[in-house]
Image (tube, rainbow, N blue to C red; front, side):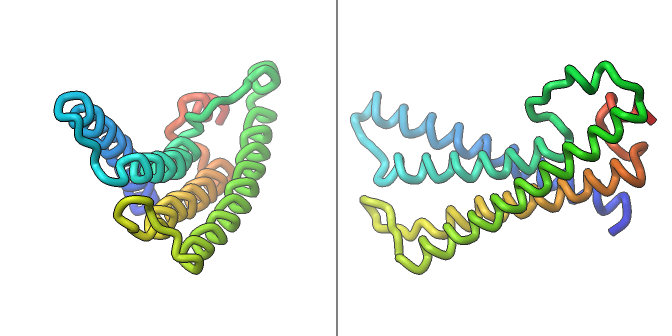
Length: 169
């Protein structure tokens, strides 16, 4: 995979995560509007809304993991030399890669379980496993992006978009 195609893949993941933010916001807006103005509830709106929120969380993990935009504590990192900052970044990213990989494995078990058990929504009896599968794909994307981040941190730190990392080269 070339640098350009990696960047396109990263941007695509971020756009998909952004689309899910919009979809969740639209779902909430329409549900509240219909409930308050017309006293009408969309069937399964609660179930669909919470599953979309779950999807958003996993795709959000993918989007924030590559950029390093998640919550960090830089107490030690900010007080060491650039060489050690890079070591800390690589170590932290490897730990994140391990944790998200295990999470992805267990989420796949959840997808398989909801499919096998034929879990459905309350009102319309829609199967829930496709929602879990889309969330799982987001988690797989997170693993791939964290792996790309790790590769770039080790071999090509100049390709990182994080200004903190460029300062430590």
